[in-house]
Amino acid sequence: MLNKKTVDDFNAKGKKVLVRCDFNVPLKDGKITDETRIVAALPTINKLVEEGAKVILCSHLGKVKKGPNEGESLAPVAVRLSEKLGKEVKFVADYNVTGEAAAKAVSEMKDGDVILLQNTRFRGKEETKPEEAGEGFAKELADLADDYVCDAFGSAHRAHASVAVVTKYIREKGGNCAVGYLMQKEIKFLGNAVEDPKRPFVAILGGAKVADKLNVISNLLEKCDTLIIGGGMAYTFLKAKGYEVGTSLLDETKIDYCKEMIEKAGKLGKKLLLPVDAVITDHFPDPIDAEIETAVVDADKIPADKMGMDIGPKTIALYSEAVKTAKTVVWNGPMGVFENPILAAGTKAVAAALAETDATTIIGGGDSAAAVNQLGYADKMSHISTGGGASLEFLEGKDLPGVVAADDAE
Image (cartoon, rainbow, N blue to C red; front, side, top):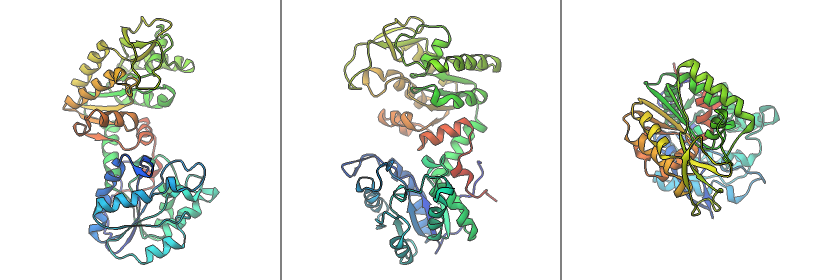
């Protein structure tokens, strides 16, 4: 899965190149509030423009639960892209995505031009199984182009029409199916971390639920030297050790699984680090950033009427020490309720430890990426993944349809 044809492996001059980007940006009142994903797509787009390709961009945005609507249109993205590229990005507003308007816009393109198609999910066939007409949509997308580049890592774990199915029809006409620079970077960092890490390799998993990370925990235990557990999921592990966890987040159905993982770590000779102390409160803060009274107790002394909300100072020291000696660190999931400044100390400390180490540091998207950006450590990390779900599935050892669908490098 790791050795794929890239945008550097074919000449796009004069070719119509369909590029699947991840422009699923947050919007408020029609304004983009975080343009990270737009910025991440620029190197691939600029390369193709400079080479003289006719660049056709597509992406989904939002969930589109109630059908096409202006609130989830990609129009604001076209405006921002035009500013970033310093040239007009023509927007095809047609809700059909690949209809007459798109065909006409493509036929009028000159070398180096860029157009952006409407939200792929407006078509309603983007996410469906191929036999439910996703194939038809994929073929229409392919009909617009000569070659295809996937640069949407955030969607690469889904076998959608515009991500994976389209490659079949591009190939049928003899076109290239490659990955863009962003995908290439994600494959390099996440792939190497899992398959060939520099050791010691430390993996840090946090977040709310054990259930979300079952296969990741098991897979990483086989690959890493030390696995650190924090966040809400840690309390199910502590319960598995026989500790009282009070009213902390707990997944009763996964206690036996956690016992198995503790045993597995022992059998494999791996270190599995769990919190030794916790920051506790009476209740969950409401609103989430409200002032709240806290206390610190040892992990085996959580009172029956209290809940653990963050790792404590002894755990911070333990986890920071483990990171110091590492050569590769992968982090996915915060250590506590980091949205509350009072309960963010654990997450901050882990971010600081990663920022200070010489190791290759990889942040696995989602809340961890948000935390690192929010805390100002983004520029100190080797790589921040743009795909939460996709990076998790990569760490699970799963094949990602959007990566598999690209041509293998020759």
